[in-house]
Image (cartoon, rainbow, N blue to C red; front, top):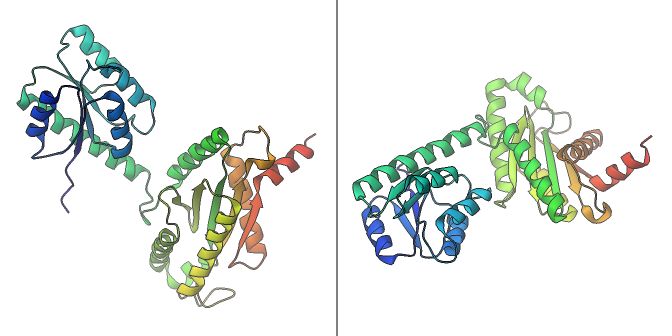
Length: 318
């Protein structure tokens, strides 16, 4: 499948320069323009271009300050920035590199140089994104892997601590998966894991939610900005979905089809005051809830609230 054209954002207050650069690039790239620094920052946030061509001398906010702002925001920090400026002293160019620019092109622009450098940096950026994606992906199921899960829950719990908003975690375990592997073989077991991953993707629809394979037959779903009602509803929907799918498993202890058990961990700040929570605490309460789901006969979900666990640990502390 052919790649979509790389997206290049040009931020420059000189309309004639924008027009010339856009004309030179538009046959090979998707070109987006902004004539003000703040507008350019919003475009970078919303469109996530593969490259930014940034003028230095602009009203209100200069290009160096805008680059500093781009590099300070995690959402735009990785995007490569090429400065395009009439300021051609070594001092100015060095400053651009120190602020995180990947290249510096002086005006008037030599278009063969512009094309060559845009091609180089968009290719390098896409290769970097591809490598990062591979490093964060479970090779069997295509879901996020344990490393990505750890990064995600660290980030989302830190965000919840800052904003005092709720967050939920589902830990999903396939019931009786060992006898499935033992009787149907590991090849069929792998096929089963792939199918489970696909079904979980169907159930978890929000773009902000992250579905991961934690290892073996265990999966995790991180649900930012989700209260207990939303998390429990999703968990029950997943259990029901697997009961309706009826993936054949004649060696299960309760049914002749595959089922899952789910532990739901809820972080709700309403009873925590100013306490800051670490990600391990949320994982622990979800694990505890999963244990109770297994003890309750499997093929169900159980819920634990982090504030209950938190207050118990404080009350029992020596």
